[in-house]
Length: 356
Image 1: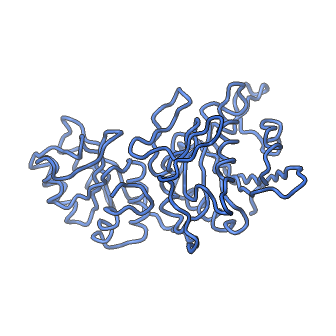
Image 2: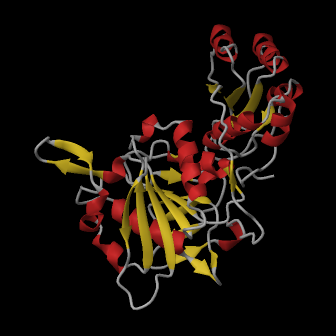
Image 3: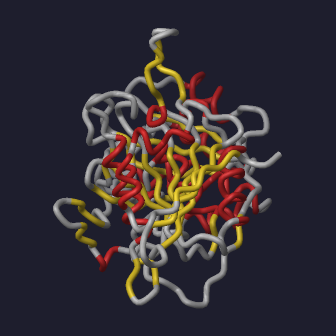
């Protein structure tokens, strides 16, 4: 079944400087108020120029593709990530770049997942969305969308300026797998505590070039589509009990756990806790240690409380976000059956998600 598409070709005396495929997944961005129903409903992108007439002034050829089932981002699933990766692969040679319109709640998870699924990516994939629907007068949707398109289309010497998966939101461009949603009521929804902004959009768009992944002329795209969802997140807290930890790490068919630990990767040293984790690693469950702190990094072995984790085979996630950690686990476990190989790959930066 073909996707519904809308094409916007600017009226110019010369050819558009770039072509962008926009993929609409759902979320707050595309909602308008229906007075008959007295509620917000998804709007038809056939009328996108009525909502964002500025698109006509961009010297960019834009194609908007809508997924068959648009969803709130709370309903995001790995199957949709696979669909997005396949759409990008199928259209990779036809377009210069890609913009994904996405709900904010799970945008950082999708950006992280795609960064691991799109191997050899050499074109921009920019995710954006809005805190207020496009049908609201004070919406942030227009600025986010227009600037995301401008960044996606930006080229120098025929090469894209930002050839990686990113999130653009509220004047800042962030590496996708370094991003976290930290705000639900202000427009500055996303932060990247452990990696600098890739660009700042003010009067001009200023790119932080030393931190943008360089263009690689010999790369070609291939995608990973096998993801293993048999993973979970275990967030530690003072007073966590043995039955709680055991019930999580003994989940049937569980293959990986992201441990959200204290500070620089520290955890309780109770014998029952360490014994439970060791039994899990001995069964082949991969344990990946990330910090509950927004900034900083895991340094296993710095304190006695983290040295013991290292001794039982827990892998340090360094300065990874939880979103990057859990999606990286899914992707690697989908490719590898050997837990030892998964642990080796987890410790490496695959797409700029950790600082080595």
